[in-house]
Length: 130
Image 1 (tube, one colour):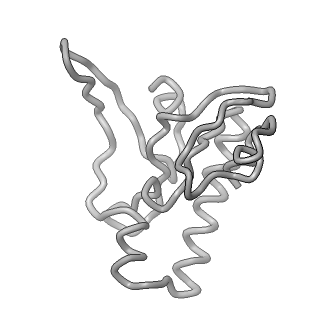
Image 2 (cartoon, rainbow, N blue to C red; image 1 turned 120 degrees about the horizontal axis):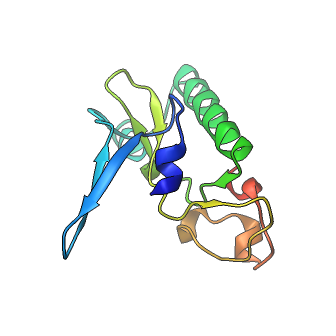
């Protein structure tokens, strides 16, 4: 949670704080009125070129920011790309993320979206997000 709280970028979902009781953890997150990219793709079947270009640019900028801060998300997928009330893309779910300057060995993420480096059990760095 500390990783996501430390990230301040217009295309990264803000985590303002958190608290817990004996059974649960509660996250105080930026409000997202719309949905996720996955649902938009399921509903429409595809994106227009303009939409795709806008989302790719937003994702690229947000990942470049994360990687400058040595943060590897490790679970980039349409379900973790949210759309706010103005249609802006926001990266969410930093539960598998790690802050590291060195290569990692852990295989994690969603099987359908795993990078080849992870599938082949190779050491990896931020390139698994690309």
